[in-house]
Image (cartoon, rainbow over all chains, first blue to last red; front, side, top):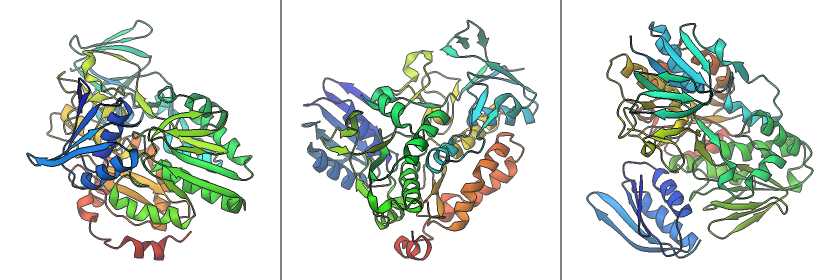
Length: 81
Length: 403
């Protein structure tokens, strides 16, 4: 599920197993503009390595990755597309 | 008696109508096509030149208790519980099940429509599948790039199956050493679900197929046959084999909030009821579920809705059972559920044989007569029963799936 407001997109991929979170992130990236922020919430532990690899590959910034209420929350700033 | 209306005559809609008919429940099924296509066989039409008949008359697949209406739906009023067709015909209902599937939507990617027209693909009907076979048939060497244009694709194994079947074709025609095969994917690895990738990636590498990950198609240029990714990379090739993005049916819903941006219906993942618009169900590819868009899911979702309509407690558990052909006489299934990640299920010849029989089983399954057999099969192959049995995939592959 995706909610957008003022250049910030919240992507809720909790309870989705791999590749659900990375699919949702890729779809949100497709709809994003440079300068946007994507906040991805996921519970699948594989999301840590996938999101790091995604940010490195796409040249976007992983501003933070932390655990909140049992979920892994990644904040990505879109710098390239 | 409740008026049950089913929209869509694909596998989910047809199975559900027949399941209800077997319990003596009358339904109306509306489909815009009088024909029923066995979609998984397009792979073999396009990449192996198969000429078997993969289309049947929908009316003949339905029980006599099902009222079949051939109409194109234009509007669904969920609050008013009615459906309006393009012809102006109106259908009122007490229970609605939407099973209108997914369709290839080249319009999402600039240039893709032209590529599909010139070279075809194996995800948009028989004509396009034959077109791709013609393009492969006249291929004499060069670069072929195969992949999906969007992270959402019907039948997740099919992009990898495609490149492996092309590899087989080129080897048989002694063209493999004159060809370069590139497999591109928007995912971080060749197969999106990690445990299956442990099996898939070594197989692709062993056949000399180049893998390009995080390649999410942004646009294509038909004239130069170049594929550009959102990530800023490009692939140039002689034959682009691109699986188009998908979207839901072009139907207006009231309220429109039941649709996601790709026009799939937002449902509760267990009950399959539309969120925020009580009553209606959505099943099969039409539903926005966190699981694969594929036939076994459609089957089990039809079953879960059937039980609920019969007043029995039932929920869809997210089960997948996607057949996977490795192009070397072996195959496997991608088995998972909401509770269990994909099983590392090594390929064997027996599973490939089962996939080859799938076309035959498919037509049988639509009648809903063999449900007890399918119940047993799905229980026997539940992911909880299979997982952890094959801890070392590489060893299995050596013994089992040499190209």
